[in-house]
Amino acid sequence: MSYNVAVVGATGSVGREMLNILSERGFPAKEVHAIASRRSLGTEVSFGDKTLKCKDLEQFDFSTVDFCIMSAGGTVSKEWSPRIGAKGAIVIDNSSAWRYDQDVPLIIPEVNAHVLDAYMKRVNRKNIIANPNCSTAQMLVALKPLHDHATIKRLVVATYQSASGAGKEGMDELWAQTKGSFVPGREYAAKKFTKDIAFNCIPHIDVFMEDGSTKEEWKMVAETKKILDPKIKVTATCVRVPVFVGHSEAINIEFEKPISADEAMELLRKAPGCMVYDRREDGGYMTPKEAAGEDPTYISRIREDGTVENGLNIWVVADNLRKGAALNAIQIAEVLINRKLVDKKAA
Image (cartoon, rainbow, N blue to C red; front, side):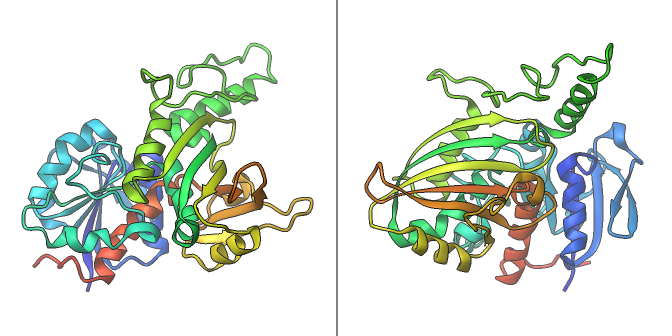
């Protein structure tokens, strides 16, 4: 059985990655439509060995598609996702627009795919499924098997997030500032970021909130509670770093039950979506450069924290454009198909 798929926001970094992954994974697509705003009408994007021309979001008939993979930003999603869902298509949205809606499931397939079973049986569902924040996605893939084994009480996480998390403009600014640092007269002032990103670290992602946290940090707290366990205490510091692709996280975990580093390593080796790379020698760990273009969530530097009872430290790295966004969305669609939770529309 094959399905008709629309990718909205097909000209963006994540949208293009979604098209790449649909092709790479052999998604059972009868027809794939690249959708963008009117100003991008006719723009060509790649889908495997094919070239697709972008169609206008406002003119496209979504009643003909089974899945709509949405990566066009929160404002567009707020307006269009309910309209598309009402046409019968399953919308898998990559923005933050629906993540905290109690009537919309927030899904990481390796962590809480079972939530979809009940959701798809609901008569008045919105037909919208939310993709989590990129930093939350990779963290919870690594934490799920550990939580199941020893129950996490508290998390302290520091993220090192790449420029691509801010889209193509963020990557372009990093590249322009890097070049400008070596060529007199080619300096490039910060526009996308609040300070220079080249050769720098910026402890500020998204807007500031009343308590001094940024919204990115709040997202990690709220999404961890919704996806994994509402009882877990979470504190986060999110930092933008001069890396093009790939987010990294240093995570300190406090458990209710004892767990050793060896036990954690064995659990993570067996866990879906996880890849342990921890040799405890020079270079025996993963970096974002090595994770770019890869699907797994990589875990390194697994060690016990003697300053608290039942504590561990881990280092987690993943490609934020893939597992943090595009791959996770495609995996959600695959879960719906594999569990026979969605029916193909009649031609």
